[in-house]
Amino acid sequence: MGPGTHAGMTMRLAILSRGLRLYSTQRLMEEAIARGCSVDVLDPMKLSIAVGNEDVRILNEGWPVEVDAVLPRIGYSITRHGVALVRQFERQGVYVANSSKGITQSRDKLNAGQLLSHNRIPIPTTCYVRTWQDVERAIRLIGGMPVVIKVNEGTQGSGVHLIHSREQAEQKTYKMLSEGHDVLVQQYIEESHGRDVRVLVVGGQAVAAMRRRARGSEFRSNFHRGGMVEPVELTSEYVDIACRAARLLDLDIAGVDLLESEAGPLVLEVNSSPGLEGIERASGVNVAGKIVEHLLQNHAFSHVELDQLLRSKPNHGVLSLSVNRHPSLSGRQIGDVFQDPTEQVVFAIAREGMHVWRPRRTFVLRAGDELVCYGEFSRIRELLRPWMQEESETSVEPAIDPYDESRDEVPSW
Image (cartoon, rainbow, N blue to C red):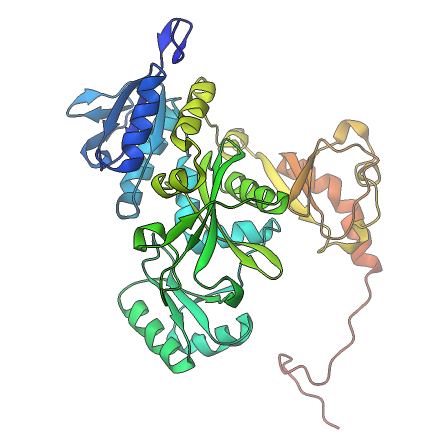
């Protein structure tokens, strides 16, 4: 039995790529073939999707695509069609290295930032602006000039601009909005000017890293923009943040870009189709081989969208409850909240970007925690209603601020 075989069968791998001759595609093919895999490079734009009650297929020139694993290398320009293909493979039970949800989340920089910051992953302060008039306020919120203005979707540094004046920022924003882009105004990290760290995460492990440096006055360090690459030793903090960011965005294979700020690493971007040339050159690591080994070890399993699975039963699903919104929960044990042990509906506690699964009834809640509950919606609310009602009855009426302009009436003096 060869290294790429399982129970007498060769793993059939499909690489979704429009560039057969690209370095990354070639390297992945080489490593897969070296391990005895059957490899096809398929152009996503030449694949069709057939959806029906019984016959659900992906077709290549009219023939069904039958594979064991899919490695998507989906470019930004074909995200919508590429994600639809990946979603179809998932629904056929095929292992896909990066999920459709993960690709979509990582491509939307605002969405990715919201997910990361919510889970305590440090990122540069970022504002989403809808009009050029919002720029002045955004600049104040992120700490002043200079700022980085970027489109919400882009790759390899395209649509990213370093701006040094408010007038220039407003003009650039107006132009980008008029071209139909969603625009982000982002904090500029001066001490990281022209450089960042790219960490390649495969299967939850940081397998390689490099530092990228821009040439000349260019502040974008992307390798494909002529940036220089060099090896870098990662601290445990950088490794932990990179791996957590990839996992939170549901990516088995990711290039996580980190800024080296005075406050520590900041996640700038998470790429679902990272290039391999620069990082293999800088690190000396066979990254393509690491990716193929991961596929071989995991292709027997397929991703399941947990939220969709939990909602398949009518009136059942997941509800979360924030301790910050209900301060009387702080200091309570879970057993105090759900007194009947047969009615334990909490299956996780979200705390400081991590999760405690199946917590004991003696687990003490504190500010910042979120209870993640699963069960019948009406029953969860019924169980929580008694102490919420108690909280409402014991709450103190807030004092009236005579200077609160949101009130309908302003008191006279």
